[in-house]
Amino acid sequence: MQSHKGVQRARVENIRTLLVVGSGKGGVGKSTVSVNLAVALARQGASVGLLDGDAYGPSIPMMLGVRKRKAGQGAEVTLPLAQRGKPTPEQMLTPLPRYGIKIMSVGFFIGEEQAVAPMPDVLGVFIRQLLYSVDWGVLDYLIIDLPPGNGEPQATLCRELQLDGALLVTTPQDIARIDTAKALAMFREAGVPALGVVQNMDGFLCPHCGERVEIFPRSREVREQLDNLPLLGSIPLDPAAALSGDKGQPVVVSNPESPVSIAFMSIAEQVKTIIETQSITIVNQEEAVPMKVNEEGED
Ligand SMILES: Nc1ncnc2c1ncn2[C@@H]1O[C@H](COP(=O)(O)OP(=O)(O)O)[C@@H](O)[C@H]1O
Ligand SMILES: [Mg+2]
Image (cartoon, rainbow, N blue to C red; front, side, top):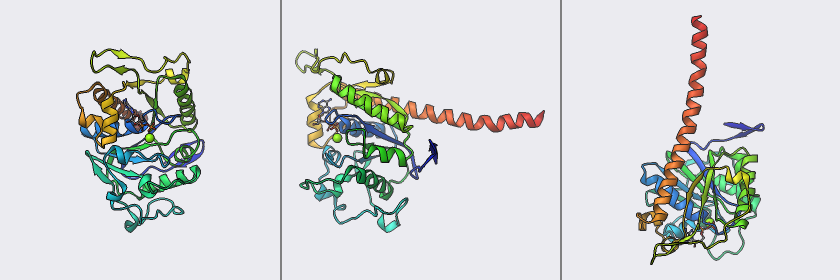
C-alpha cells in the first residue's frame, strides 16, 4: 500500500508495474502508443498485460485483431461492481493472448452498437473491478489505455490504485499540448509519477523522397511542465501505422524496421530503464536503513 495525502492505495497482486497511458485529447494516438509499447516491451522479454479502459472508444481489441463476438466471454459476464478487491476464482476472467501480450477491454462488456456508455464516475469503478477480475498471472507491466480527459475515470483510478507511472501522449499542436498539460497537472496532483511524453504524429515522412513534412503548426505555446518532462519519443505520421491499426496488427509487428517501430522500441527501452532505476532507488533506500543500525550497534 502507498500513501499519498493520507489515501491508501492498493497494489494489484502479481503486477510489478502498473502504467497508464493518458492525454487530454482524443485521437492523438493513445491506443496506438499503448498497443505498440505493450508489444515492444513483450518483444524485449517482459511479461505484459494491456487493459483497454476507454469505454467511449475501445479500440485496442480492433487494433489487435480481436472482435467481441470471437472473444467468447464478456457479454454474459457481469462484474461484481459493489465488491472491492479480489473476486472469487469463479468470477475471474481469462485475458486474451495476442502478439505475446494479454489483453482485456471494457469494450468486451459494452455492445459495439450500444450508444450509451457507462457514466464516467461509474467507469472508474468498473475499470478497477475489471483489473482485479482478470487472471493476469505474474506481469512485469500492465498498461491501461485511458480515455481522453482529466476528470473521470482517471480521478477514481489515481485515487484507488497504486499507479507506478503515467505516459502522456500528445501531438505537436497547441490544442493538444494545452490539454495534455492539464492531464499532466491531474496526474501530479494525484501523486502519479509522469514518466515522460510521447510526441505522436510529429511530421510526415514522405514515402517517395524520405523528406519530413510538418503537418501540424509547430506549437509556440510554452507549457513548462510538459517541456520539463523527458521526451520518450517522437513518432512521425506513417500510413503503415494507421493501416496496421485497422488491420489488427501493431506496426511493431507488421513493419518492425520502420522509423515508427524503431521509435516504439526505444520508448519501451526507456520506460524499462526509468522503472528499473526507480526500483533500484527504493531497494537502496531500504538497504541503507539496516546498514546504519548495524553501524550504530557496532559502535
Ligand atoms: N503515428 C501515426 N501514424 C499514422 N496514423 C496514426 C499514428 N498514430 C495514430 N494513428 C491513427 O490515428 C487514429 C487515432 O489514433 P488512436 O491511437 O486511436 O488515438 P486515441 O487512442 O488517442 O484516440 C487511429 O486511426 C490510428 O491508427
Ligand atoms: Mg483510444
